[in-house]
Length: 427
Image (cartoon, rainbow, N blue to C red; front, side, top):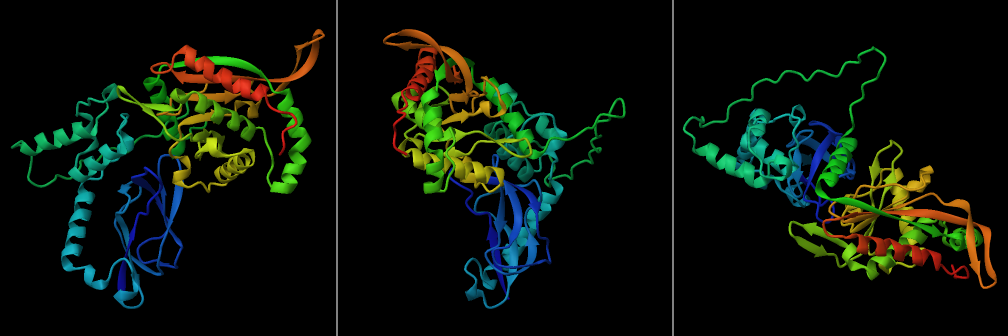
C-alpha cells in the first residue's frame, strides 16, 4: 500500500487560499480517480477538488469552514500498489515523525477551533487562520484593538498581540480549551407568519463587499443618453447570419463591451486601482461582466485582455462566461484580475442605475434598457421628430482619484463610439 497526499491545487492567478465548504467523501470512503472529494470556495466561486488517484481515504486534515493555503495537504489517500507508483508521496515518506506532527496539529486544532459566526465583527480569512493556529478564541480576538479601516484587526495587529500574549506570565504554557459557547438562537418571527432565512455564504460575501466598497470609495455618478439606433438596426440585420456562421448568439453586450474597452485605452487613468496613497496603472484591460445567477446572487466573471478581441471574439467570451456562470462552472481564475466592470441593469427593465464600484477598481458602467423614444433628428434639410432607439449609460467612479472631468469624458467617449457605430460593418 502507498499513501498519497491530496493537496489543495492552484485555484487561479493571485488566489492563495480557499475555504472548505463541504467534504463530499469521508474517512473510510473509496474514491475513483478524478472523483470529487471536497468542495471549496474562494472569493466568490465555489469549486470542486477531484482526487488524482483511486484508493481509500484514511485521513482528512481540515474540517468544514477551515481556511487552507494552496499547496497544503488536505487529505491522505491509501492506494493500491507500491510507493513508486504514486507520484506525490510514498510509504517511506509518511514517517512516524510526520504522523506525530500531524497528530499534534490536529490536537491543536481540536482545542482551538473558534466559531467566527458567533461574532458580529468582520475578520479576514488570514486573521482567522492565525487565530486558529494560535488558539485564540472569538471572545479573545474581539478584545484586540484593530488598526485597520473601521477598527478591523490586521495581520500586524494579531501577530503583535500573539507576541505580547506569549510574554505574559499569566498565560499557561499549554493552550487552554475554549469555553463552551451558548448556541446562537435563531431569529423568531414576531407574528408567526414571517419566514426567517439565513443568508447563504455568497450573499454574505456580497453584502460585505458592497458595504466595504461604499466605505472605501467616494462614489459619484455621471449619466449620458446614447442613440443606439444604428446598433439596433445592424444587429437585427446580421444576428441570424452571425449565429449560423459562428454558432453563437449575438447580443448587444459584446458591442457595448467593445466600446468600453476602446474608451479605457483612450483614458488609461480609468483603468487603475488604488493602493494606499499610490495609484496602480493596469497594463491589461480586463473587463468584469456582472451576471445575475439563478439563485438571485451576483457574480462578476472577467474578460481578459478585452481590448485585444474583435467583435466575434468578444461575443464568444461574453457567451462563454455567461453560460458557465449560470451553470456554476466558472473557475476561480475567471473572476480574478478585473480592471473595470460593466453591469447591464437594462436586462431587468431599469432605465439607469447607480452601481457600486467593484473593489479595488475605480469605475463601473451600468447599461440601461434600450427604448424607442421620440427624438429630434438633425439633417442638412432641417430638424424633424423621429423614433430612435436610446439608452442611458450610468458611470459610477471613485472621486478619490477620478474627478468629474475624467469620469464624464470617459462615459462620453463610450457614447461616441456607440453612436458612431458603422451600420454597414462586416460581421
